[in-house]
Length: 170
Image (cartoon, rainbow, N blue to C red):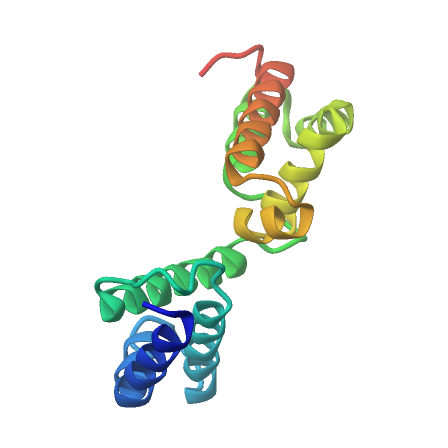
C-alpha cells in the first residue's frame, strides 16, 4: 500500500470515528475539559501521520489508534504524578529506606549527594524521569538515544543510589 493510500485510509477512519476517539479519551481523563480530550486525539493523529513507515499498512488501524490513545493518556498521568518539587517513584522508595535508618533530613541530604555523585548520563535520565516527570519516549526523541539505553541508565542509577544510601539491602 502506498503512503498516500495509507494517509487516505487513516483520514477516513479519523473522520468517521473522531467522536468515538474523543469519548474514549474523555472517559479516561479525570476533570478535563472537552478540548483536552480533543488535544490528545489530535496529538495521536499527528504522530500517526508522521510515522516513518507510513507505506507499511497497519492491519487493525482502529485498534492501533485506540492503543495509541491509551498510551498517550498513560503518559499524561505519569507527568501529573511526578511533580518537579517532590521526589517520586524509585527515588521515593530509596529515600524512605534511608529515612528508616538515618532520619529524614540526613536522608534527603545523603540522597542529594548520592545523586550528584552519579555519572552524568545516569544522573540526567534519573532527574529527567523522576524529578521532571518526563517520559522515556520524550527523552529518547530529544537525546537521540534508544529507550532501552535510557532504561538501563536509570536502572544502574537506582541501584547505585540504593547501594549508597542503604548498603544495597532490599
